[in-house]
Length: 308
Image (cartoon, rainbow, N blue to C red):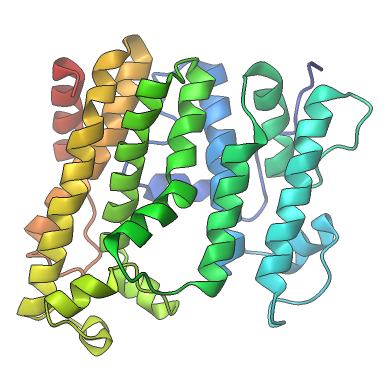
């Protein structure tokens, strides 16, 4: 494989700056520099794709120009065209890692993937799944069942954990199964934190069968604060998310050293976010519950020590 230096993982639009808003540290300082660069490259890709799919790019016209995508943000289908352009740029990243003479990716965050692909046994599949999740978001705004939502998480969340394991060299089938449970749990947690924001985008990730079970309407979710029915529903989903985290947390005990600390931090971020939702009385409409950093650190230490 070619040994090629990518441009620094910068996008000029603040995409990487959103790492500080996550429930857990994306690339903490205790990791080796090469690992931090790889994790930020993965995060940059995932965040870029999410921002393109959500219409949150700081400079959508500039990104469209880089990718050779026609149209304007107001055009119907512009987001899908951007996602298609990013997938083509992903192909360039894999091509450039294999052949120094191949065309380089056009977006700087895509160029940051080249050395990662060069160094690690990653395939295009998990990256493509993240793009596909954002395509789904353009056409699917409601999920009938919890099973449907978890199927979506296999596209939107699980690939990230698989990439982290591949970078660390620990991508065994057992670990991948545990990682998928953690990542799906983290995704459900994020959906609970973002109920009001998602509704503003026209999306509801709370399963429709659960809304019916607890007597919650879409109008209830649009209220400035949660009524008792909404709080009961959120509490129910919190328990489900915790079950997923509990199922996957033993992943931490299968590794050692700094990777163990990293995975403990990821998992603790989910638990701490759930605690924040509980502390808010399950009212995710009045406030976006964020994990307390001290609580997160204590939970991470406990998970690191126990291995789950």
